[in-house]
Image (cartoon, rainbow, N blue to C red):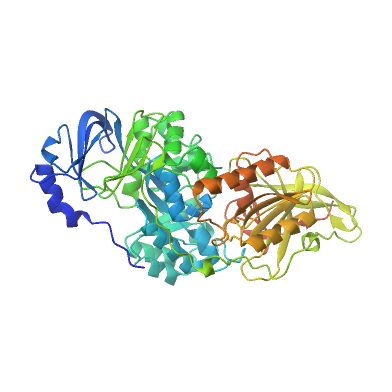
Length: 600
């Protein structure tokens, strides 16, 4: 696909100079605002901004010399003029939306730049899926930079994906116009042990002069961490405590602190700045994963900045961590992240620097949203049929596919159980003594069944295990084709017949999420693109997602953002215990383990 690139600074420099000098008129001038300067960390009253060709030409106390008869005047009215917000690490697919609809959802919240890693679709459709995401991203009126996924599969030998990403794929993608770097290097054991494939991907990225994203999901901050940093990842968002944040910046990484729909990792780490006094320029705010309900109801990066401020962070520092710090990290300090001459004119007008109401959003010099309403088009790609037909079970499933046979002669058995931890990505490796009824192991109390259903190659494979923490009651089942990162199908339930119903239903609609109780479907979100996304408007998807949350609650689940917890149960790169199409995986040792153990 051919793209019309946004004019570069050198392309428009002659006009920017002429406007700043007063020889030519600006396209737009903002009058009488409070300039939030993230370079100097100052708030400067009574300033104007002149914009030409989508870039900032002049910022100063009087832009009257830049005004001509056709110049659009925007009265800032004493409001704060803030750089457009940047999300330093995120996955668009987690919003269950295409790039176009994701952009439509977040633009009114002041997000004008995103650094996205489409490794979800890479697991389903490979390099072609990444290309489709990249191409739609390039069509948007805001800046969506794409990181080439690094790890599909995320843990080789422990899961099977629809496609594998190779070093050759990475090298090819580095030439695409919207590729900004390498997506999070989740295979941290591979880097630590010098895996040639992982090192080849990192090398291809570094040779292209681009940034390598990190993902170090281990509490070990000793020699393994040192080895990982030596391998080249330049940032990390998997920290959960102050020590994690400190260790990363001390070793020259950027510490990315996230507030997503289910990850609340800022409050526990921001004390590295607010209490220990570390230099904040090496800290970045991000979302990682936000579902559509969060975007519609709570916000995006404006929500993250507000949260950081509520945790005691100086508002100007919080804004730096969501603007200039991010831009600098990706080598874009001269392009985005601040309100200074030459940069893209990405500007927010807000009447309060702490609560951060987003009243006007300007992107590339155009007003794109006002008072929560978008005012520009977000073009859609014509997604091919190959991206809409991705759920292949091999055969219709029945309750027998979800049976767990007991050892001969046993009355009870000990099982390894995945323990869900509210508001965190890690799980716990638990053990439970479970009953045997008519030769089958049954869940008991808060322990119910989980199954990983293969959906890429129609093998008919089903891996069965147990999970606790959801609190489900009665006869129910929930299924989702969003199953990070391999994106098979995760089915959790208390009744095997309904687990089969839920799985077959998603095969019928081409992917999505469904909840069954007492033989009836309570809620359904259809995600026809790769079984991950919908190209319907965000508000519609969010409403259906809210139905899923309500259905889970009706089945006894009261966890915050329980759906996100459900979708991550196959993420075999985050400790402690996960499920894959190859079995139960202990991520502490990166080994498959038996589901059942004999009682002592």
